Image (cartoon, rainbow, N blue to C red; front, side):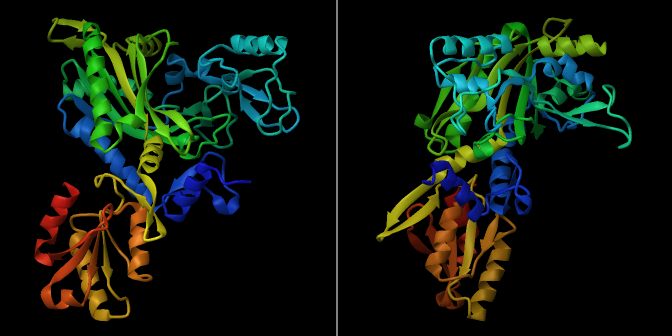
Amino acid sequence: MAKSKLDELVSFCKQAGFVFPSSEIYGGMSAIYDYGHHGILLKNNIRDCWWRSMVQERDDVFGLDSAIFMHPTTWKASGHVDSFDDPQMECKKCHTRLRADHLLEDFGINADKESIEVVNKYIDDLRAQGKQIKCPNCGSTDLTPAKRFSLMVKSNIGSPTDELTEESVVYLRPETCGGIYLEYKNVVDSMHPQLPFGIAQVGKAFRNEIIARQFIFRTREFEQMEMQYFLRPEEMAERYEYWRQTRWAWYLDLGMDESKIRWFKHIKLAHYASQAYDIEYNSKFLGGFKEIEGIHTRGDWDLSQHSKFSGADLTMWDEKTQSKILPNIMETSVGLGRLVLMFLDHAYNVENVDDKTRTVLKFDPRLAPVKAAVFPLLRNKSELVDKAHALAHQLRQIYQIEFDDHGNIGKRYRRQDEIGTPLTITVDFDTLEKDEVTVRERDTMAQERVAISKLPEYLRAKLGF
């Protein structure tokens, strides 16, 4: 079978130390992945750029790190226990579990957010027209009717010998915003914000996906970066457009080609929403536009529900109106793993150089896992190795630096190109005499000599920070 584009990326990410299959020595786990050395550096750089933009550079957004476990009633109030599910079908021949709404997309039917009854009606209507939904795994048309499949991951707190009862059940949070709503009152009481203001956090979430076969785009354990913005109802239209523009500009600032992203407007809205747009990225490895970030209005539904179920007063004093109000909420929510995949997809290039190919990741320097690599020209000359080690140690006080003395200099260049390192620094025999090094740029492959005393200033100019 020919290797798919996605298989190419999966193989590359493993070989280059970005992403590994989890528990691989035991056969792995479907839709669970671990991040290797270069992967976690890239992921942390994306996270830090987001945090800097959303929290550090603003005075109206506050940070939070809420717990994964929350009181079970949290998810009853939010509606997740009763309605956070997907329509599941099963192939009676090969027993593959299938997303009914995804299968209907092949017939031009958008069944997103539809009830099980409506989904099954769509399927029955197709059969009445002589059209058969087939299992993509074995081709069989003998499929079960669609049924509700909860995406909530259950656990329990207490003695492991205790019987699992409804009272002892807890859930691994399916999204991080629940913790923001529960801590909203404490943030108001401790930070004394004025409307409008936001609460942002980065954290793990868990979903028992029926089918997750798109590498790190859709996984059962993932990280979200979310910001919930609390505001007066009359401010929603203006602020919503402001945040749409702000989030769009963030991607362009990090080097994203504007032709590769687009807005998708949701027509089917949750009952509490007035607007919902997604930012989508046109992935060459996943084959088309895929959702990256959602920017949605939520009204006062979340705070109203939690106030109703908890009995807590979640209104706050508004200096502008001199009254207590229950704020409306607008959210931005993005999957960190999806951004890792997007930036890898966008940066990945295969080029012909001197009748050979090189794989190069053309990251913005702020995202690059390693900012510069230091090489001794020859690994068997201790004076060069020692000088290169000392230089790498010096530069590590400022940047993420990698030392490499394996193989010839050409192979080392290629390895650094593959992980997106913007600059490589070579210590040679002239370095010992003149205290100068050769610096090579990743994208142009141009080289120049730079005095070691001026190297920190040079790197700042080239890297932009």
